[in-house]
Each structure stands twice: as C-alpha cells, then as structure tokens.
Image 1: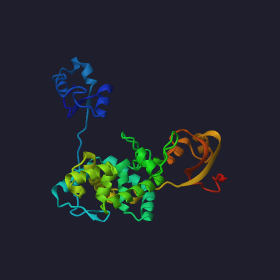
Image 2 (image 1 turned 45 degrees about the horizontal axis):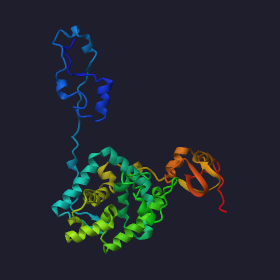
Image 3 (image 1 turned 60 degrees about the vertical axis):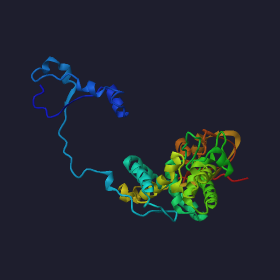
Image 4 (image 1 turned 30 degrees about the horizontal axis):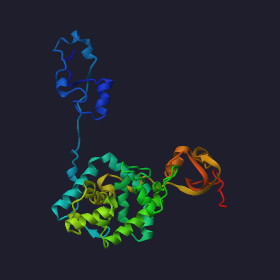
Length: 343
C-alpha cells in the first residue's frame, strides 16, 4: 500500500541509470514529459498493479546542515602579478577574462584537487631548472594549462608532452621523436627546451612575459602579425584566437589557485603527491631489442611503473643502444641492482 510514504520514486532500470550517469540530456533517455506521465496507482489500488510496487522505494528525508557552498564566496584579489609584471585588473575586460578562468577551475573541484595534488610531483624538477636558468618561477604554472602535469599528454594538434611541443618546435630544441621514443614526454628534457624557447620569446618582446606566453601558445609569427595589424604592443589589448585570448588569463588564474591550495581547495602540503623517489640507470642493449618487461624485472619494478616513469618510451621495447632509464630508487641492502657500465 502507498499510504504513509513520505517519499516514493521510480527505481531506474539498468538502461536508464547508465544514461543518467553518463550525463545524458532528458531527450536522450526518457523525456521529462514521459516521466511525468508514468502511471501512479490511486490510494487503495496499488494491489492491482503489483509490478508498480516493485519499482518504488522509500527514501528517508535528508536533513542538510551548514551553509550552502557558493563559488562566489571566493574572490579574485584586487592586485595580481605574474613573473614580476602587474596585471591590469582595473580594466573591466581583463578582470572578467581572468575571473572566468578562476571560476572555471574552482567549478570543477574534483579536477582542481587532482591538479593541485599533481603539482607536488611535477613542479619540483621545473622549479629547479627555472631557477638555474634565471627565469621566473611563475612559469611553472604553464604546465597545468598545457598538459595538466601529464607527461604523456597528446593533443589533437599533435603536440606532445608536459610542455606540449609540436614536432617542428621539438626538433628546433633537439627533442627527438622516433617510432619508439618521444623525448617531448620527458619532463626534464622538455623543460630545458621550454626554457630556451621562452627565453627567446621574452627577448623577442623586450621582456614582456604576457606576449611571450601568448606566442608560446599561438606561435611568434601569428602574434607579431596581430600586433602589427592592430597597432598595439599589449597582450591585454590584443584580439586573437579564442584559445590564445584565454591562455594567459588561465595561467594567471592557475597561479592564484594552485599557489594557495589550502585557501581555495582545503589542501595542505602533506596532501600533495610527493616527488617520486627514482634514480637513473644506464641500460646497454646489445641484442636487436629488449622488452621493457624484462628491463623492469631486472631493476625490481614492473612494466606499468617503468612506462609511467619513462613516458618517452612509446613502445613496449627498446632497440639496440644505450639508454638512461628511470627506475624506483633502490633500498640497499635489501634491494640492490647492478649498474651497467658505459663502454
């Protein structure tokens, strides 16, 4: 009987449930109108349609406690800088562009938490290399926008790696890409290439990092053409491709949020993924090829971990030659391996 039920709802079939979990729109599954027209037994007659009772469940009333969370509780500061340059937030269109990216990051809280956690693992090498090159530490936030700190990231434009180099630019900075190897995916090697490219772009625009980053995204030839056609020399006044218009603003928003994960995401430093404990060994392959499974076993790890530590190896084997391979750091005396000697 249906008397006394405070809540009753239809139990979704496997088919309709899968549509809902995939984010299907009402017209893709059962329409809202059809849902409203589902037969409901009048009081006292539910025994006439026993199959309907099988589709009803009783849900307890949910009491919500505490204040409702609003994204608007977070505010973009009145002043921001990036790489030592002030950002003109007093311009209405600049503030709106940065706020848009700021709230886009915060809206997908789960994604933002994972991004913040990854910074603990991928920022350390970039920070070290940027400091040694004398470039601003802020440039590391480009990694979040370019690849989400995923070394094996690959775009529809065929850009690869954490810094998203296309083939031609990769070759320009000596990042080799062969059938079994893509050095654009190596974090340290691609960071070194990015440093050289960004330094070149900075010098091209007399130290303007905003124009340098825009050129990193769109290409220096396109940005120089836009500057000439529009008679401006200011990224924030430039009208360009939509992606490039968003690019610098997104990096600035990323710096604000991910430099303060405790403020925006409730994360402390101990919540971030720690840097991986690895060491680099020399592997000499004399046979025509050796499978990565065999190399992994030799160094006390397994195929998946070896691939994740060395995303530049794109096949499941290495051909004859000498290679520098990252493996989990050994813990002697319980686990030691013999280092191959260079000839």
